[in-house]
Picture 1 (cartoon, rainbow, N blue to C red):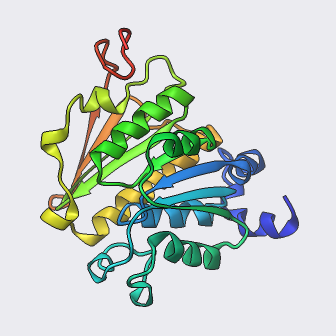
Picture 2: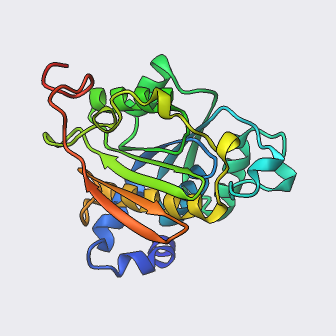
Length: 249
C-alpha cells in the first residue's frame, strides 16, 4: 500500500483483527455483486468505501422513480438509466481506485458460471429465486463463498454459504423448493432503512470472508423484525438429501 491508501483506510487498519494484512487482502479481492437495488446499493457502497479492489456489478434493470425511496446508489437524474451505469458513476465518485466491471443483463448460463469463477466472494442483492438457485449451484461448482439476504415489508434475513467448508449448508438446504414463497418489493412493499441495514451487514460479512476474520454467518441465519426491532438466530445444517450439495447430489 502507498501512503494515500494507508491514510484512506487508516481507521480499518488500526483494528488489530484486520491490520495491514487484512486491508491488503481487501485491496486484492474480487467481489461479484448481483443486483443493484435496495440491498445492492448499500453493500456496493460499503465494499467500495472499504477498499475492495475489484467489483463486478450485475443488474438488468433501469432506474425508476419508485426505486429512489430505498435504492441509494441512484438519484433523480438517473431515472431511465441502466442501474449498472448509475451505480458505477456513484461508486467512482466515492473511491476511484476501485476497479469496476459492469454486466448489464440477467446473469445466467455460461455468463453466470464465468462471473462466479472469476471472483473470490459473491454477494446476492436480488429478489429473484431462479437467480439465487443458479448462484448456489455455481458457487458450489467453483467453491466460492457467498452472502445471501432478503428483505420485504418489515422483515429480513441474512446468512452466508461457504462450500469450501465440508459442513456448510447451501441455499437449497435452506429452501429446498421456494417457488411458492416468492415475494418482491414491487408487490409487497418494503421500508427503506431495512434494506440499508441488511445490505450493510452483507458488506460486513463479505469483508470478514475476504479478510478471514471473525465468525461469519455460515451455518446460521439471522432474521430481523423491524417493527419490534428484534433479531433471532437459527442454526442451519447441511441436508444429506440436498439436491445441490447433499451426499447424493
